[in-house]
Image 1 (cartoon, rainbow, N blue to C red):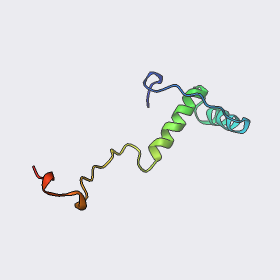
Image 2 (image 1 turned 90 degrees about the vertical axis):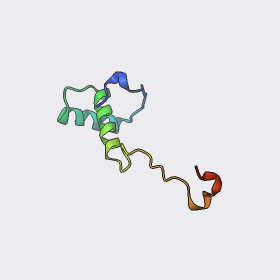
Image 3 (image 1 turned 60 degrees about the vertical axis):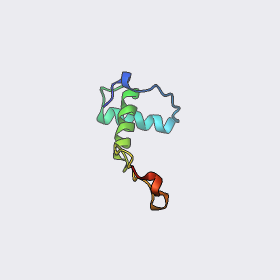
Image 4 (image 1 turned 180 degrees about the vertical axis):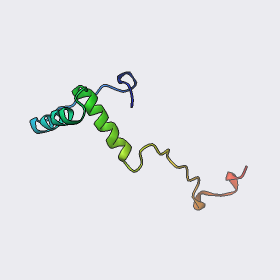
Length: 73
């Protein structure tokens, strides 16, 4: 988990329903956290669950039609 100083500040606007859901989640599962800390954990968990999370981009090299004698070393 990143510390607040490692990240970037972001301002978001939540509707009443989303804010109420966030507050319920904090109350039920992480009562010691602030809204900002809870949202940071929620977004971090979501990002880690994405299929491409943490995987470096694969360098597939040149395509066969891009190869020619000028590519030889």
